[in-house]
Length: 143
Image 1 (cartoon, rainbow, N blue to C red):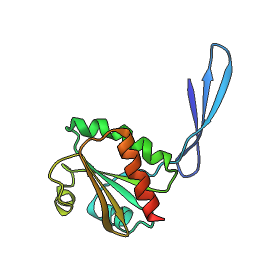
Image 2: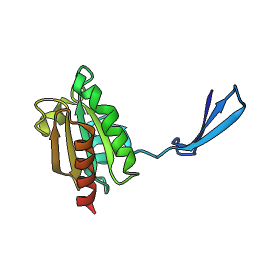
Image 3: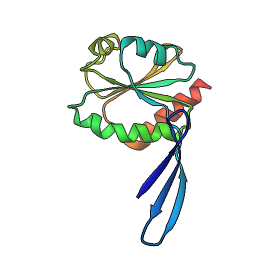
Image 4: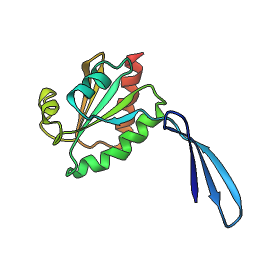
């Protein structure tokens, strides 16, 4: 059985796990991850182009198997950065105009945006170590 304590902003700040067999509880902290799905072109402008923090834009499709494999990798790595970088998810089927604006011809594509401009791009499914090094370089470059 699991109970989560929710802060006023709606984010998980602490998680408490109960183990009924021995009556013990374990407390863990959850990192606040800046991961969101883009809802519209206006939402993209507000949360990505106008962000003071660098943003990785993940262009994906729900039918794309490499995208499905990339999702847990990139989300975990962004979470490790503890707020130094955000992750915006853009479904190319819902927002084809954004995909065209950023020359996305195949998915998955990761684009690092800083001050409203593209600064880095990674195309295709990559292994976790390569993604981590790429994200860390983007964070370091933005400081």
